[in-house]
Length: 115
Length: 114
Image 1: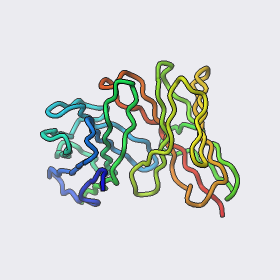
Image 2: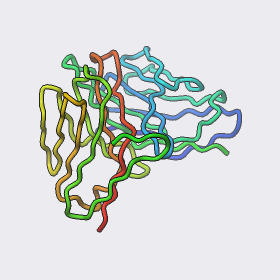
Image 3: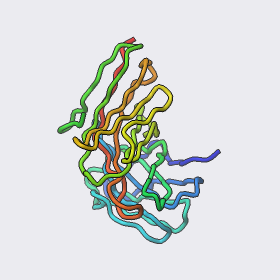
Image 4: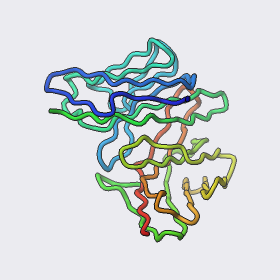
């Protein structure tokens, strides 16, 4: 069964704590993305990676870090420097096509709450 | 249409009627557009896409129209059903692949009245 999985579904963070959100895909996609979504808002890009061992900052990268050691995995760490981490986090993946189309497919999301 | 501030625009439609959701995109160089549907608490789902060399594309109960002159995209849903209630996002591909990720609009909430 192909797709994108995110875990956990809900995550609680204490003050000053780093937490890591998991994202795995078995679609053989080249690119992976992390978005943050706040209530009533659209998607804001945190980080993206077009290829293994390389990634770029998105619009709101401060307070977050990522790694891309394997093609199928793109974990996101929310560090203690992120002062307002409560949000719905979405991971996506896509092929990178020569024709210029990049349909992104999304995981089910992780809701992060601060205790 | 696109939202301003914290509140999503909402479209309320009677069950069985047709829905039209609009999106104004930002870049005249965008060459590929996608509509996504997001139900509450879930990730966005791909609905339909269209390339810039097309004006119209039809799927099952959905049609996307592209007007490049005014940089406008619309999603039409025929015979709207309660299961269509969700937030709908448009997205555009601005640059070559590998350079710029998709840019997403802020979304429109569709509410279907049974």
